[in-house]
Structures are given as structure tokens and as C-alpha cells.
Amino acid sequence: MIDLTTEIQRLKQDRNAVILAHNYQLDEVQRVADYVGDSLYLSKVAANSKQDVIVFCGVRFMAETAKILSPTKTVLLPEKDAGCPLAEMITAEGLRTLKSKHPGVPVVCYINSSAEVKAESDICCTSANAVKIVASLSDRKVIFVPDENLGDYVAKQIPEKELILWKGHCVTHAKVKAEDVKQVRELYPAAKILIHPECNPAVVKLADFVGSTSEIIRYAEESEESTFVIGTEMGVVCTLRETLPNKQFFLLHPGLVCPNMKKTRLESVYQALHNHQYEIDVEQEHILSAQRTLERMLEVV
Ligand code: 13P
Image 1 (cartoon, protein in one colour):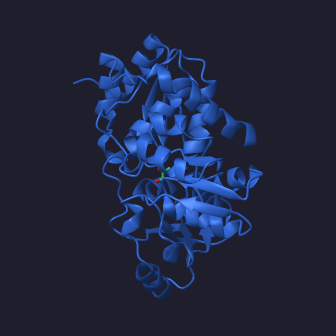
Image 2 (tube, rainbow, N blue to C red):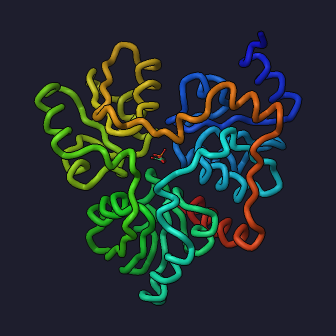
């Protein structure tokens, strides 16, 4: 039987490839990755990668983002059906209709969106920089798509702005209810509750800290506290338990497992490199506008 990790390392050299993995990926995938992080960090890595091939262990919009930022590279998504239901909650046509109702209002799109939606937007953002990106715009009114929970969080941080929100949400984070947070507070009164801004506003309001996946990890690393309840996908809890064995981590809700992120296994990474699959293509007509939307974001942060 072949040792997948050894074979992946060999194929990676052969193909001059780099492996990127999101914080939600399985441990076995994170261990073979060259870079692991949140959406913002991984898009910066993709934009600056020197290798010919980028294997993106995540979901489709992440691999598409890598292709838009590095169009001359081959970008591989190891599981072709790893999508993001949130990104699929908006179409470019829907966005055009919304824009026509608010002429001249700039559009900020969350990175969890298709290349076509990015191409229709003015500037992109991730959960790590959404507040900064919206604050960087001189306009008072801003269209924010497609995550209404993140949009609501941003609006509360910058009350002088008026945000027009699209009604999209992450189906995994939406499982958490305010009642769940109240229950864990009672159960673990000393614990810090760290929550992703994709959770609904009633949940976010009860958090001790709100941040992107990497910001949650950093908070737990730097905190003097020893017990944490994590309000984002299970992968973050796995990483924290492994890297901080002297601290205790609980998942806020048992449903915080993203089925799309969990599709990629070590075997998928091996097959991706071995069979050169599944190559991401972004239509030429969208690539330049989507690139401008992403590059504007990278100029701000
Ligand atoms: P981060 O940018 O915080 O890693 O989040 C990505 C994501 O899709 C969260 O569900």
C-alpha cells in the first residue's frame, strides 16, 4: 500500500505545486498543506505563490479566488463538488437587479461568492477585514452581499454607514441559536465564547470575541484563559485541541460541521496531484473585473 503523505510530497515536487488548506479542513489535510489559514491569508498566499500549481483544499469559491489572483497558474480543487451554499445564494443577475435599485451605491462582496458576482462588485472583503473594507469607502450607503449576518455585524461596528443587505447566510453557522450560547454560559461560566460573524446577530451579540477563523485561533493562543467555546466550524476546534493541549475547547453546537469542507480527504489531495484534477477555470469575461475587486481589497489590508 502506498503511503499517501510521502506520495503527496513527491508529487508536489514533481509538479512544482503548493498546497493551501482552509482552517476547516480535516487534520489529515492540514498536515500535508504548506499553508493553512483563513480566507484572507490564503488569498494573499495564492496571489504571491511562485509554484506552477496551486492545490486548494477548501471550497470552490476559494479555489476560484486563487485562479483570479493568479490566472497563469493551474489551480486544482481536489473535490469538484465542494461548494458553498452561501456563495450560491446570490447570482450576478440578482446583484444587477439590486444595483439597479440603488444607482451609484458601491457594492462590497464577501469572498464567499462566485467569480461572476465578484466581477459585478466594487470591492471584496473577508470576515477578517469586512469592517475595515466598508469603513474605507467614502460613501455613506453601501450594498453588502451575500451574507446578511456578516453585513449586520459590520453595520453595528460602523453605525454612520447605511448597509443594504442581501438575504444570504451560511447554513452551518445558522444552526446556532442564542439559546445555545446561554446554555453553554451556564455550563461553563468561566469559558470565553469566540464566535464567527457568519452566526446570526442574536448569537454574535452574546460573544466574548467575534472574528474570522484565524482571529479566533489567535485569540485562544494569546489569551490567559484556559477554557473556550468555539462558535465556528469543527475544524477550528480540532486545530486548537492539537496546538494548545493544555487548554480546553468545546464546540458551541454539534451541527457546526461543514459537509463541503469535509469532502476533501488525504486521498483527494493525492488524486488531485496524481490526476491533475479538478482544474478551476474562470471565464475570461469575468476574470479582469473580479481581479480588480479582489485587488482593491488587498490594497486596503
Ligand atoms: P474565514 O475567512 O473566517 O476563514 O471564513 C471562511 C468561511 O467560509 C467561514 O464559514
